[in-house]
Length: 121
Image (cartoon, rainbow, N blue to C red; front, side, top):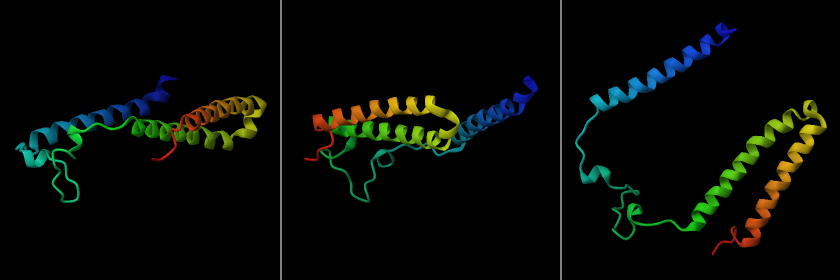
């Protein structure tokens, strides 16, 4: 039984070794001459001013709320597509499990909509 997992374990070991070796080689052979020009943000050729430098500014909470809503939408899409493909095999249990998931998801969207999280200024 364990012999069936041997190719998977070997693939994992090769992948980890490749990543480690790549990081080691790039650290040893790569150029190491840091200067302020290399660490400056590049914005289409425009040199950022101190006021507009993203390292010195803070994002608004609205940015994080929209990012979290986007992640929730992605999770919904990731769950809905495979569920729709195997719905016939799941039967009523799969239908009601996804119905509960959708009710909770739409409740959260309604809460965000009611709180004004999707309104643009």
